[in-house]
Image 1: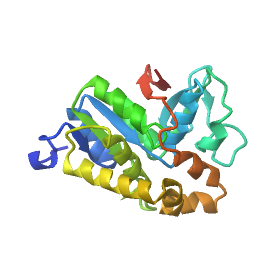
Image 2 (image 1 turned 90 degrees about the vertical axis):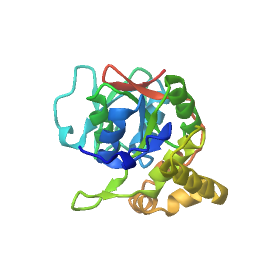
Image 3 (image 1 turned 180 degrees about the vertical axis):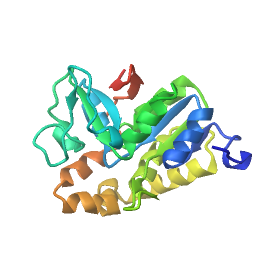
Length: 239
């Protein structure tokens, strides 16, 4: 993908771009890439990794492909077992290896994984821990809010992912203007109350309408987790 130099945020150590194209750009130029999908992939990964599980991110198009032996395939969000719903993972046994497809966060993680870049999964729950881990890797640091998809598969900017990206960027120095704006959005939402703001976003309203209010509540818990899901041998796991 040919990108003008002015669009690459080269003057800054912490950079932010959205979605698939942003992931491709930042993966090519950054030492570490953080994928942020607050509702719900990154939050689900944090909950699973915090319980000692490992997550295999699957592109949505790979949701029916065979998984390796010993790997549990996540079901639909309304299924009775593990799924993309973070609430469904709160009792996940330690040592579980979970294949987790999603059209946004998991799809981006799978794309970044294919490049060999250092990959972290970040959300509001583990924002400070992920920022510290990225800082330890070194820069440049790329933050990719995943966004959602419109029915025609174009990207829909998702406010919750801007908030998660901003929470991570807030703990890092030398931010691009794009990252600074995400920090400003996060700060304003934190001051108003993250649970209420997240519940009022389009994605939050959608999940609540579908009976998944608990997922929104889990996603709004700022810095309750020290888990830093990092890709090792194809799986996102803490440590």
